[in-house]
Image (cartoon, rainbow, N blue to C red):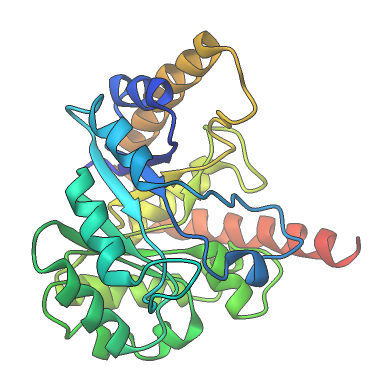
Length: 281
């Protein structure tokens, strides 16, 4: 089965291009509470999409699902509404899937599931070491449809230098086994275009297949539509990029266990080089 590919944008024109190219989910990112503080100084995507963005994309999407990442579970205050109002608004605007980020307790997951009330699919974003430590209890909560491992924040939570160190120290491998045993669909991290990225995406795609992952986010290394202004260039990147990913998937789906093991060894070697370079900066 092909990976379910997701792309973050609030631009209807880009969303239409991504949909036509075969992106499975268009990703609206409303998370902002606490994000600047924990990711301060790091070159990460910090969006602040809104319910109005959901409505605009809902109007142009008829094939791709509309995924919305909300804020962590929170109470209302003078600056923002509480989680209940946020979730209700997101569903009313047309979301198909809601993603919960940055949870650390079973209670937060239970609250999330209760507030969604089965109206749309639920997706947990595992990106804290606290969540990893209690993942067995979390997976016992009824109403979880899917799980995604957020490598960026999770590697920060563990005090690591590079997000793909989590592929080398078996954190991702062990989590994927637990998800598989629980019968929950799962994915991890993001991928760039084939041949691109600090760790080229073909190695990451191979490990997705090795671990039974079913989903990945298309990163800025795939197409940074916030910087590329030529809509024809964006369309070309999507059409060619998705086609190459699908061809790579067909190839690695036929790998033997020995070939998968060779791939993870290459990942370890390359990650070691990258980490050393980061430390020597």
